[in-house]
Image 1 (cartoon, rainbow, N blue to C red):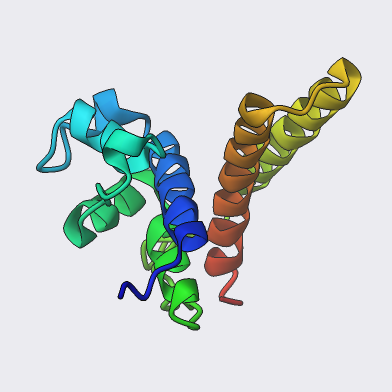
Image 2: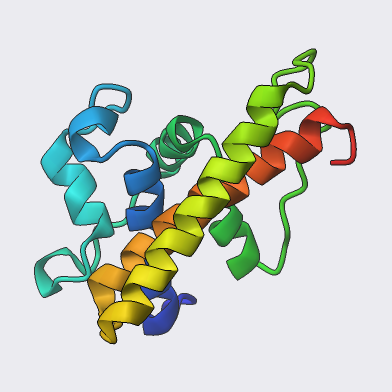
Length: 155
């Protein structure tokens, strides 16, 4: 009997989609992984045809590298009851200094979250596409904030 529940399988598919989106999509990510765009799409699909197609660990790591944040691997760790903790300086690339660009990046990314949420609320319709847009923008803001925290040495 499998240890992973159907709910956890669906979560893995959803987090794979998030990681793939943050990595620039399948058309871009396929050039940096060992699999093609169609296969990457299958890893993120909840369709019956792809229910047992999960992202291999090496491809998950590559997607997370492209995304600039361990979206997929962190979720895998959470399923096992663990939490990833960044190695000091890993997000910033050891030696990167804090700059005005970091502040602007955080401001722009968090503003994008606010913009998308207010657009969704104004439309009065929260569907799967809206949830995906909000999640993508939030992930990008989190990535900018993590980079900032790493650069100030508080990670």
